[in-house]
Image 1: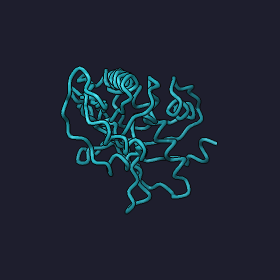
Image 2: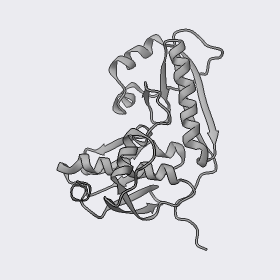
Image 3: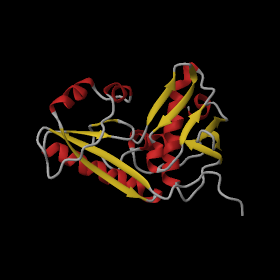
Length: 224
């Protein structure tokens, strides 16, 4: 039997920090992400301005196997957000990194990562944040500029599928991202599987490391 192409980590660590104006039961001194990086990941300016008034830090973290990572991430975030609400604080995801201000759990796939767009290569989409729960990031090339939103949707639907199937199922090979996957990826819940969908081919590049995805059918034609 050949080895599975995508390696599965033994342990992953999820880490959030709660920033408060007054110390809590303990103080955890950790290096905070640079403001410009937090802004790049979508954090609001008002939240970043508040950080100067919140000098105390309380870590909330979990170290688990990858099969339990998504649940552990939701549990850790729920605990962090509860502490922040009780003490008028803020929650930072240290690994994405960004300010997290919503607490609906389980989080849909779209809230588990951020998109990265290469300004030098506008035809490429990359994810950021999947490696926190043990999955390789996704790279999708050859994106037409006028169809970027559709390709974003395909990536969200694919992430939903991967999160459901990882680590029991190796992602390398052909797959179909359905409208049900995309809806569930944005709104949560289970996919309502249909035949209608976008065919993709997934490979693993160990040098990056990342999952490289080729879209085999036009999203605009296949989905609508």
